Image (cartoon, rainbow, N blue to C red):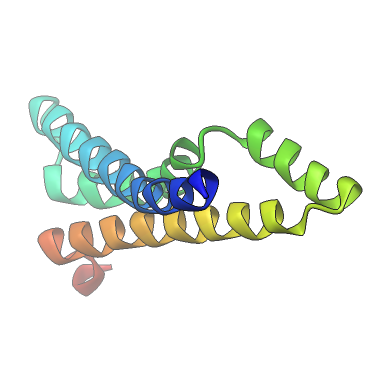
Length: 113
């Protein structure tokens, strides 16, 4: 019973970790760009696009744990673990995409690109 309940917090945390990595990285990167005399909003948009995959990797805890879980699911017949990992990855992708959408709304870069 405890393992079933442990999945929901991990699912929600995966979403918000990816969102936080993306918003924090793009925001702090924009400050750095401003300090270096570069356009901060354009830089924030570019950083958000570049950080998207890294936000997902950070949210799922690194790729090796995911591969181990998928391997265990495939070769040991534990399909529940594969489904859980897939849902965690989908949650992280959703958080990263939400972050990109927020940065896009903030910077309005999609209009000028």
